[in-house]
Length: 230
Image (cartoon, rainbow, N blue to C red; front, side):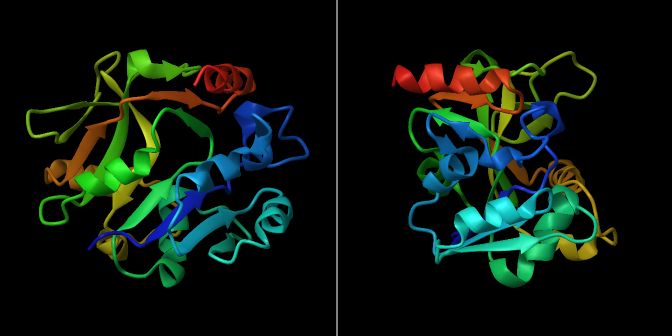
């Protein structure tokens, strides 16, 4: 039950990154000399199966990754499927084991979180394990915290509180069996998380380094400045 496959979400329209995304998908925007999608792929060294979903200006991502033998681009047409629908659509390529799932609009400044995530994964008690970042260790993040943890590292949503101690970094391990019970085609992974949190099967662990939110143009310079001081 240790993940051997991974998925990177790269299908979105990148509206917060406009005007840079008017003619380019957000995963192809360069940070510190290389596209964001390459920053994500660098965290997955050793994975033999990586699926990247595409939709907006898909051909640019597909051309960039064409020579990567362990990467499959899966274009979502005619409509974008969101995170949950995208993951469900990729299951034939990913297989039935738990999967490492990540966004493609963040940069980690510090150790690669994936080995620590894998080391903490316990399939006997977990359906999800999310990598969390303390609010004080986030850079260029304009939102509130997403989660807190109880004494067993079980996830607790912010709910009606104005904020929470931790931000979801965009990197997680998920079991995918519950997807079979969702009838929608396009849906958010929040549907899956809600079930897992209600049953106390969703957990978090806290990343030790810093994390840069590159969802807006301001995040590009912030990430490059942070990387320059590593």
